Length: 74
Image (cartoon, rainbow, N blue to C red; front, side, top):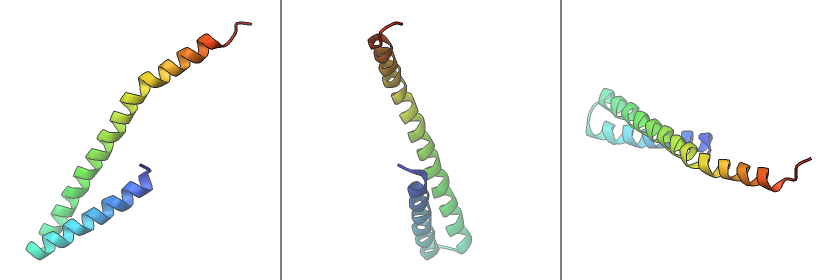
């Protein structure tokens, strides 16, 4: 997922959370819930990036090893 798409989704989700909290309570409470939703979404995005980096590393090392073995020595 590209960061701009994530950013739009995060802002839309925060807006929905803020509207839900505004209906249920005060404006300050809505702001607090929206900020909390943004923090949770950002932590999830960070975790996803770390997971992608960790799972990609062995595959790339294997591809480098295979390409190094297949090239003839000069």
